[in-house]
Length: 291
Ligand SMILES: [Zn+2]
Image 1: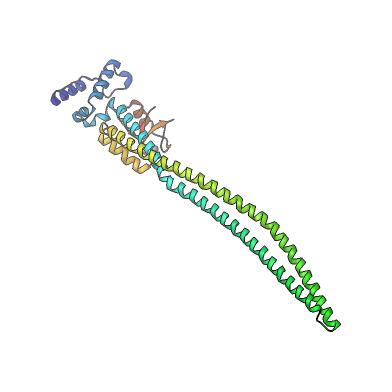
Image 2 (image 1 turned 45 degrees about the horizontal axis):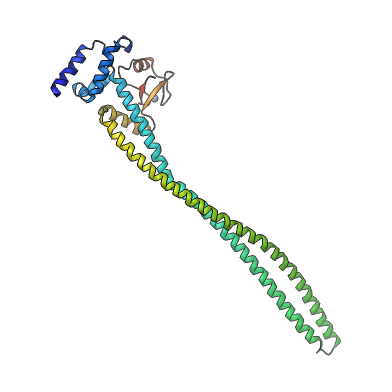
């Protein structure tokens, strides 16, 4: 069976008087028949002549396959980049949440310090009042006018101090209201943000799982695509891609390479246009096609 098919392939090529000639000179019905035949058993064609991709119609077929594989690879690369960016995004939202937690903690501490300060002032006032009561009791016991006046001065001085501290205490209590409102607002913001972060993390987990599924599907698809591709050209495509990192197969754009944008020699443009051989850019090595 293989031998018979091989003979048929040989017959087709022997009978093809247009191999190596421009597309315009090739007979359309003949080309169509040949195309169908080649699609039927591309691997057999390669077995007959591994260099066939460098001659005649299969060039466009090889390029089409490489372009499709490239589109596929780029889609997979985009998904991998997105997947790899997820831990960083997760770390960013966690860091933002930690900052908010820190702000809430600071606001809470400021309010607590304010409350403690108001309490301390209150105790100090209470202490001064106690001393005033003691001075007042002593006023009944002193014998001399000088001692009495000294006590009066002490009492006046303590009362002045009490008024001062009470003013400060009042200010502190007003400030504490503001501090408490701020602490409550930050606590509320933190609770809301924690919920938002949990949702975002769940969305990221879901996206990561979908990406893995898509990548697995893409890998299976690629294995199928690669099975029908020319291994030599595929190997070359992969080597170029490893080297340049973005596109291994690029269109010619206004006489320049679609990858490195260098002006191409007219002969290279001409060869790509005729699609009789696969041309490559002498500057960057990318494979070129005409569109
Ligand atoms: Zn180039």
